[in-house]
Length: 338
Image (cartoon, rainbow, N blue to C red; front, top):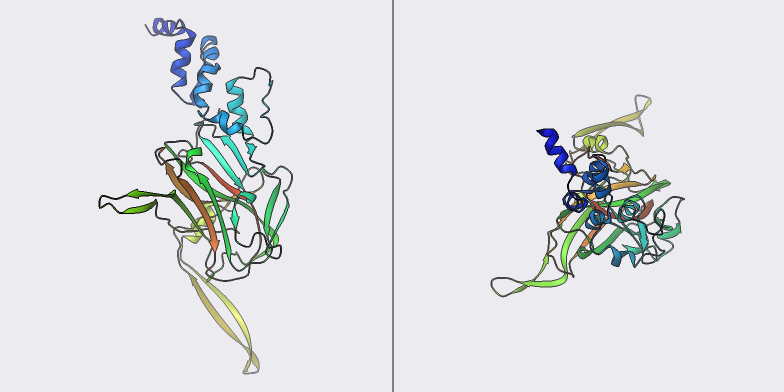
């Protein structure tokens, strides 16, 4: 019986198989291509992969700095374009932004370059310098912190560019120079804070009482650590209350010897700390916060991402900023790859 039913499936017209596959996911389409030659032809067809590409992908690619090269360019398939955007994000608007796709779902991913960010004192060469990026970096230049006591970096992106019905996460992509200081996660030093706010972009909504108010999600601050690259292991250490003991030798004489003072400092548990991880491209990234895109926010709606450390007024140096990346949240660790 099962064999007969399977044979019936194989006799379905390719168009019917393609339509059914187009209602699944890019990963499912790739897996179904091994079922049979008929399924392979349907799963690789433009009819399927046109459904997986964002409806506005042509408009976004029209802003590309260079024509998008796809393997076998002449007559390249929709699947080849999809995989190209997953593997190699495209630079837009004079290399101030990049656009790509998430392989699992086809959701859009964007990254704002350092040039696209608002950086306090970013135009003052005594505070920040702009230098060429290391080979293999996403963007051609980076911003390097020279010396400031007020660190504030903000990026904005229109929600209309993102994929509706998707939970996104914002990441600061950065490196630390060898001579960096002032941003260490030391006891008694407040860490930098990150906020992600989704707003109507200056628009207003009318309440039931008739008053107009700006619409925005309340921004919650999250402490972030920039110096330690152990990811979850380091974050777990921050979440525990810890005591540090050190000896300080003074100049007074007690019994013919210098006084030695035992100092005990306590670092309270911080359950919300976010610590960086090393990326495959050699840069580091730290998660700032997540937000949802419903798709009905309106064309003026924006997400605003901010990193700042202004409380301690410590002088800081050595933070190298590549940009802020906004990509879909990964809900499952072991998702099958295409």
